[in-house]
Length: 345
Image 1 (cartoon, rainbow, N blue to C red):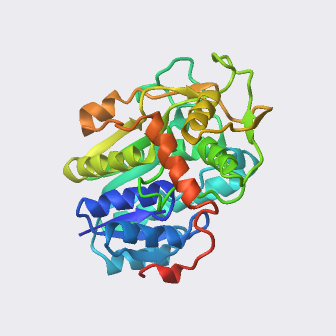
Image 2 (cartoon, one colour; image 1 turned 90 degrees about the vertical axis):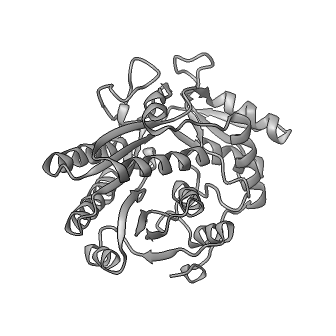
């Protein structure tokens, strides 16, 4: 039996693949490489010394997805595949609804056809929207403030409806906060296409000289230094959370949401200072206007995941900065351009 990983060549997907393979699971990866690189999977193979069965396909291609299920004995699915830039979702909402929601519907239909009813879904803390209280817990009313977040919220609701129609399903909805860091080897990490949408790769690209200065979006938020506060979590802690969630869905039924965060928030300027201390030089930055859809403060109450999944974040801010910087300085141009032929197929 194998675990299907959709979007397995992406940032969080590759780190989770490492933990799956190291945990003794056999995996099959689907990725269309629209925002990822086949080289990342080759490096996962290098780190784990294990081969990955890869299908270069899109979830919107139902016939191709059926072939994957026909050719493999799939036990469960970890679903990462999806577009993820908040800012882009505001300017291109139809692209996000089509890709994220329609792709998930195809996946669920094929899973149901093959009676594969175990699923871990890559959701997001954006489903909470702009709450008046922190930390954020799973019982809060959901109110996404941008199209990206609304796709995650809609998919969560769809999965709840799927379970209500068939109580054999077991689904974990993992609401990520802000993943940062990289594998300690420095072989894989976050490799955004074009200008980074997320803070940490933006900082590290400035530090390595690829970008001139960091753009800080908004310094007039109601926070102690005026910049947005987020819950940053090491990507390897996040990967471990997926393993714990997989263990849960393989042994139970139902739908449960879990926050994956540290329970502590850091401002943008605090993150800049932490990186300056790590690399030993200043990070130049300029203040710009707030981005549409951004909120002031967001950090997790992760107690449910600790209680029900036996998971909690173990790595601190220093490790996040160290591993992010290690990845960037060893790979100043990311994975660069490679072909899927470099990965076992």
